[in-house]
Image (cartoon, rainbow, N blue to C red; front, side, top):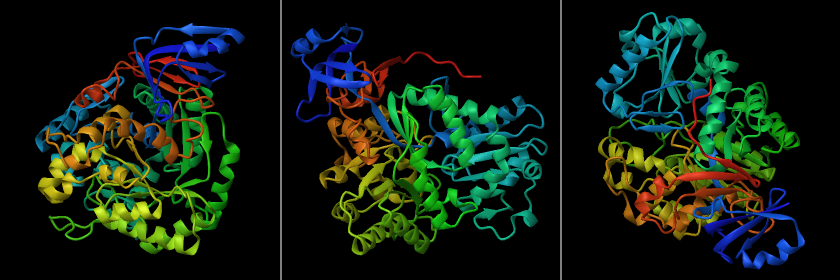
Length: 550
C-alpha cells in the first residue's frame, strides 16, 4: 500500500528540492517527494490512498533533539518543580518562582502537603534567584521530613538532616570523597555520584522510574520529535535504565527512536578503562528497532553551566569563585585517546571557554597522533567560547551541539552577577559557527531546557532572554539555519544523516506536522507554532491533550 500525504507545503531540507506538495510513503520509507501530478505513474502502478488530513498544514522532517537524557528525565519528572522559569509540560504548567522568599513559600506548601516520613525531592533550585541552599536552611522548614533540594543544573543537590539520616550518610561513610560539603549537606559534580548511589533505591524503583519514563515519552512527542539522542547511557544504573527504556520505549512502541551514547565514566564502576571500552564495543549487538547504539561515546570536561562550575578563561567569574573539572585534564586526554584510537565518534560535555580550550588542545593532539577525516568529534553544550576557538574548532573538523537555552534563561542574571555583559551576550556563539561552516545543531539537554525544538529555534533566531532583551544580535541565525539545526544537522551529529533529517526518496518517513511555516512566519512566533502530529516511519501519531500517567 502506498500512502500519499498532501500538505500546504513540505519543507524537505533537501537543497535540490527544497519545497514540495506531496509525499509518498510505503513500508515506513519515503518513495517520492514532489508534486502530486508527478506521482501519477507511481499511483497507476500501485494500490494507494491519498490523505488530505494535513492539506492545510506544513510538513517538515521529523524534529530531532540530539542531546537529552531519558534516564535523568525519568528521575526528575516525578519530582516537585520549583523553578525560576515557567515550565510547560504536557500535563501541567509550573509557574515561575524567582525570589528566595517565594522559593521558601513554595517549599513550605509542598512540605505541608507531603506524606509524613516519605522523602520529598524538589528540583529546580538556583542560587542566583533562590539564594544559597544548605542543610541548615532546609532544616528550618522541617527537622523530621527528609528533604532533598536538587539543583537546576542537576549536577548538585543539598539534603537536610532527616534525609542524611535516612540514607545513612555521615562523615565516616563519606571518607575522603571529593566535592562533598557535609556541613552544608551539599553534593556536587563527582560528589553527586555518591549521593545518587544512596538515592538509587528510591529514584530507580519501578513505581518512580517507570512513571518518569512514561512522562518522558509524552514530553518527547509533545515537542514534535521523532528521534532523540540519549547522551549519557548509564548515568544512574545501566541495567535499570536499559530495561526500563526497553519496556517503555521499545516494547510499547513509542513514536520515536533513541540513539544511545554510553557514558564511559559511569560505566567504569567495577571495570578498568579498557574493560569499559571493550564493553561499549559490544553494545551495538543489542540494538532493537527504536533503541540503537553505534560507535559513539560521551566524555566530560568541566562542570555544569547552570551552577557556575564551568571552567573559564581569565577574567573568570567576576565574584571570584572557581569552576570545576569533572575529570582531570590528563584523564580526559587519556579517555579521548582510547576512543579516538578505536575510531569512535566522541561527544564531549564542555561548557566554559577554558574547558573548550582544553578540549580543542586534545583534539589537535589526537589529529597529530592519528589523523582522521570526518571524525564527528562533537562539542556538547558550548556555553562560553571565544571567536578564535570557533575558528580553531572549524579547522579541526569539530562539530557543535549547543544548548542555546542557556542564553534565554541565564544571560541576564549571569551578566549581572557572574560574567558581565559582554560574555553573557555571546553565550551560544552559534552564528559564528554557521559562518565558519561548522555542522551545528541545537539540543535541550532535557531537563536543562524544554525538549521543544521549536523553542530552541526561537531562541537561536531571536536571541531574546527571559527579561526580553536581545543578546548578541550578530550571533542570531536565520530560521532556515535553525530548522537545519534541528533536522539534518542534528541527524549528522548523531551519524544518521543517510536515514533521517531530510525528506527524500529512500529515507525513513519521519515527519513533523506544523500549523504554520517556520521559515515564513514572523520569527518571534516560531515557538508558538502549533504541532499537529508526527509521522514515525509513516505511522501517524496525533498530538492531543495528555493526562498525567499514574
